[in-house]
Amino acid sequence: MSLKSIFFNFLLIIFASSFALIIVEVLLRFNNQGPWGNLDNSRDDPTINRPDKKLGWVPQKGKYKFEPFSEGGSPFTINILEDSSRKVFYQKEQLNKDELIFLGGSITLGWGIDDSQTFTSKLQKKVNNLKIKNYSAGGYGTYQSFLRFENLLEDKNNIDSVILVYVPSHAERNIGDEFWLRTLTKFSKRGYVGLPYASTNEKKELLRHAPVKYARTPFMESSAVSNKIAKRIMKFKLRNNAKNKYAVTNLIFSEMKRITNENNINLFILNISNDENAFEPYLDTFKQNKIEHFNCVINRTKDLTIEGDGHPNEKMHTMFSNCFHNNLKKLISIS
Image 1 (cartoon, rainbow, N blue to C red):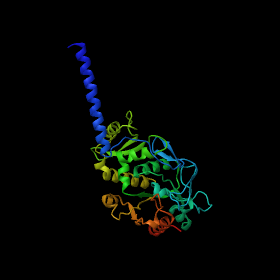
Image 2: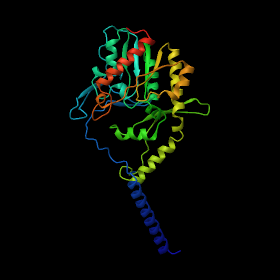
Image 3: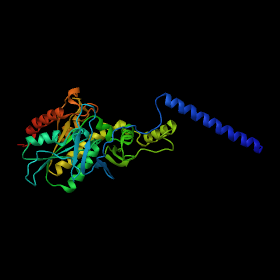
Image 4: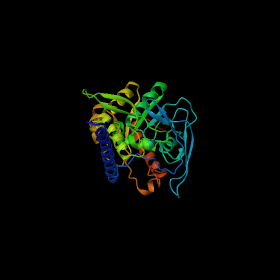
C-alpha cells in the first residue's frame, strides 16, 4: 500500500470517527442527556461543610447567614459549634449532663430556619434532664450518620440516647447511588464530593467503602459523549449496589444496635418522611434486634414548607418536636 493510500485511509478514519461522534453527541442532547455543564446558581450561599476523609464531609464551625429562598421568605442563620454540631437553644446551664443526640440529614439539621426554630431546640425547651445535641449534616444518609456516631463514641461517654432519623431516600445514599453522587457533586461549591458507602459480601456482612468521587473525563463539561462515558464509569463502579439498598440499610441498623447495646445507650429509629410504610423493609430486623422505632409522619403541605426550597418550616418543626416528645416520654425518662 502506497503512502498516499495510507494517508487517505487515515483521514477517512478520522473523518468517519468525528462524524460518528457528532451524530452521537446530537442524539444524546436530543434525548436530554447533555454535557455536565456548569451549575447555574444565582444564590451566593456560604458553604457550611468541610471535607472529611471518613465521612465525606462534616459541618464546619462558624456562623452562617443565608438569604431568603423566596421574595416573601425570611433570612436564616446556622451556627455550627466546635464539635461540628448545630447549636441547640434552651439548654440548661448544668454541665456534664447526659446527652440525647440526633443524627440525620438536612431535615434533622434544620435547613432553612434559625437555630431556635429547629425541632431539636423546641424539644430541648421541653426536656430538662437531658442535653440535646444535633450532629446531623445536609446530605447524610443512614451510613454516614452511623459513621458519625462511631466517631462520637471515641470522644464521648455521656450519651444516654441516640435518635437516628430516617427517610426512604437514605437507602439510596447508603449504597453510593450514582445519581445521588452526581447531584451532590454538581451542587457542591467545594468541587468533587467524596461519598462513603456500604455494600454486602457473599456472607451478607456489611462492607465499608471509603468516600468515592465522581469520575472526570476530558471535556465532560461541554461534551455530552464525554459526560455519558463518565456516567457509565460510575454506574459500572457502583454496579449491583442498588438491589442491595435495603439489605445494606438493615445491616447498618443491626450494627448500630449492637454498638449502642455495648455502650448502654438507648437507640431509636425515627421516620419523618411522608410515607407511613417507610419502615416496612426493616420490620424483621427491628423485631429480631429489639430496635425501638416510631413514626412522625406529617404531610408536607404548602403551609408547612419553606417557599422556594421545600424543607420543613418552623411550624412543621414544632409539630415534629411535639411528636418526638410524646413518643420519647413513653420510652425513656424525660422531664
